[in-house]
Image (cartoon, rainbow, N blue to C red; front, side, top):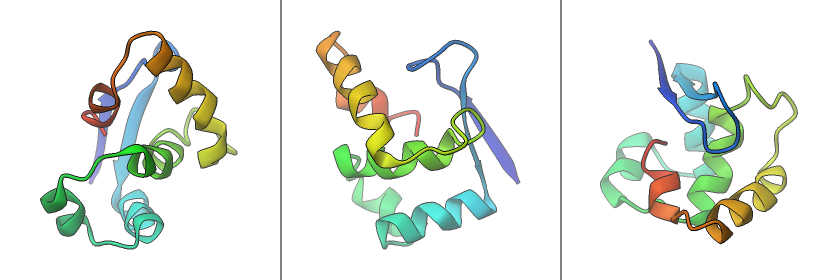
Length: 89
């Protein structure tokens, strides 16, 4: 299983990528199982900061949540919303 979703928020030709290993990594990062994450619908700042380094590691090899803070801030300052950022994830 490998799923990708186009995601050009931070750069052209980028995509989110999740496979079983990355989904397990996301569960560990959020301390919740995938069904609980989906059921809660809680896709706030913490969710984005934890998910983006995992989903975009093919583009940002040494990604960390802190690396995405200025990118998210710029996206929001430019008129984007947190929901628009979290929805594709």
